[in-house]
Amino acid sequence: YGKTYAPTGRLNSLRALIAFAAVHSLQFHQIDVKSAFLNSPLTEEVFLNIPQGLDANKQTHCLKLNKAIYSLKQAPLAWYKCLNDWLISVKFEPCILDPCVFHRSLDPPIWLYLHVDDIGIFGKNVMLFKKEIATRFEIKDLGVRIEHGNNAITLDQHHFTKSLLNQYGMTDCKPASTPLVSNDHLSPATDKEKAKFEVLGVNFCNAVGSIDYLSSATQPDLSFSGTQDVGTTYHKGETSGIVSWSNADWGNCRATRRSVSGFLATFHGCLILWKTRKQSSVSTSTAEAKYKALCDLTSELLWLKQCIFVNVIHLQFLIFIRFTVSKSPIKNKDRWTAEISTMTEKKSETKEINIPILDGTNFSQWHICMKIHLRLKDLLDVCKKTLTEDAITTVRNKWNKASYEAISIITSSINERVFLEVINPKNTEHANLLWSKIKEQYASVRSVNRGRIWMDWQRCFYNGNLQSYIDTCRKLLLELESVSIKVPNALLLYSLLGKVAGDLKLHQFIESLTSNEELIEKPDPILTHLQDYVHLSLSELP
Image (tube, helix red, strand yellow):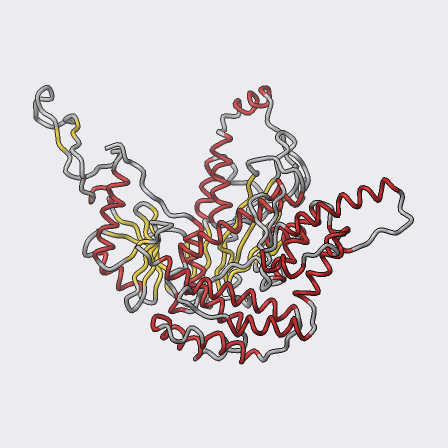
């Protein structure tokens, strides 16, 4: 009886589905279920007093509800369960992360988005589903104004905007030709200012909340003048896949000194995700503020991937989010923030990340992470340079102390094999000697080192753990590139696939990959699709 929470769909899910429909030329319709709550049976016994007009003794009798009614606190949840049970009975599968997104893989496939009694339908032939659901519930068409044309879908909330203007007496207002001050900082209203505003009889919180909903739903550009009739258009653009941006200011809120994050993401050029908000804590640097924004964006993208796009492998639409600076689909203006997101760091500001242990086969990954760690501690110079002989004693003492600290950090991040190969009394006299020895041993282009890395590639085998195999292959490909071993991509590609070809579970999937000429040009796209296969397999676990 106490469970009354009913899930409602997220706008990010809806926009992602609309963009997906526009890119793949799917139909999009929206319907409403009439008197939805009255269709919902109750699992608990609920009684109510006899209303006026019924001929019954109110002192000795009461009414027992067989189905939910409006204003009953369990009604939304009862309706969701009713609709959910029916959808499952007709072969729909709910999304694990967003229970208001459903998918049916029958031909033709259908996607549904639920928001209480409103249902968004996406598919090649939505009329088939509308006829199907009409046999169970009474429905009608309604919703946001949707314009289809030229393989595009345009959404706007023009009527909602007009109703807001009418509600607050702004129907005859004209767009201002001059913008507000762009860098003006607002501060909380004083008691006197609040009293003056209350005299106007306007609920400021309601007004701002309505505008905020409008800007977060279909009009992210609402802050610009003359955008009353502007909506959001979804169509297949020139950019493929997901591309996203994030940024943040630094402590610009004068009241709290907290920073404001902002991010957005597009799918095939369609804007599907945007958000700006004040951060929950004070950042001590611009890098920290921007890193928080990047984390917020990444969590949204990972959620979106698992929520919307995990079941559409047959449409060749799989996303794999990378944190490589040079190839990342996450665009960040701050290079330093991007570097932090790609590596490990044990300093207090980034203590969530760990430096990988150097085992002799992952020098490129280890080298990138270790450089950032040493730079943060102001120790990178002692690893790359030597002190001049005429340096004064105090400088020499500080330099030697920093050198020993760098040696301690480096030796704590190598395994026993590497330790035995590079550590000796001479190399540990100074950090730059140890640093040079490790680079010479594992990154030089001499024949012995190149041969060792190639032998590691040859010895790499698949033991049934696909994730481990993918990680090892990625690591070794980086090593091959770091020592300039020119191996034909075709040789690397078929060597990579040949080791997993014996797995019967992967046979059909590998056949589909090798039949795609665009994929078999380089190893990286194949590894990306194998990674997506792992994610898909995990999502299907009970």
